[in-house]
Image (cartoon, rainbow, N blue to C red):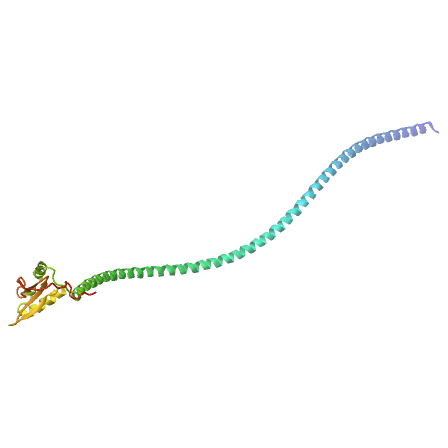
Amino acid sequence: MNKWISISITGVLVAGLAASLFLYFQESSNLKAAESEIVTLEGNVSTLEGTVSTLEGTVSTLESDLAAEEAEVTRLEGELATAEAEVTRLEGELATAEAEVTRLEGELTAAQAEVTRLEGELATAEAEVTRLEGELATAQAEVSTLSEELNKVKDPRHFASLSELTSWLAQDDTDTAYPGKSSQELACILQVKALRDGYLLSSYIYMGGIGFNLAVIGDNLYAVDPLDDGVVWLWGVGGPLPSHPLPLY
């Protein structure tokens, strides 16, 4: 073979070998870098797998919590629906109660007006009762007085003493109140007036048309001049008579 050709081939081979070695070392370096990167990535993958596992556990927990919360929400929604139904029922009852309150307030107003009217009538009635009680008291007093006067007339008595007779005659006005009357008329008037005061004072018409009155006091019989009742004299003496000739009871 030609020497220069051999050199050329040898040079080419050396150059190729050098290139191959360069490529080898370059690839070897790249491979190591790649292996290192792979190791790093594998570590990252392991870490990420742990993170993913943790996240999956967290997701599982959250899903359980979510399911529990959803169940709670469903329960609360049921309770809310029940509560809303109860609110609706209570609102209906409230409306009914408010209507009843309005009705009762109306009745109360009417009742208060009626009470006011009745109180007015009661006040009027009480005033009337007071007036009638006053009239009744007056009437009772009058009845009592008339009863006493009637009892005097129904149960007259003789004068107890001469002084009682003269005292009664002193306040009597028969001898001055009836001018022009005869002694007979005055004697009868004096008899009636004495009887109205509960006394027995008989009238007596003497012969000649002279009238006078007689009073029994104890054992004595006294005469009274009706023309001048200040004149009293002893008419006679007799046995004592009962003070009340005919008692009521």
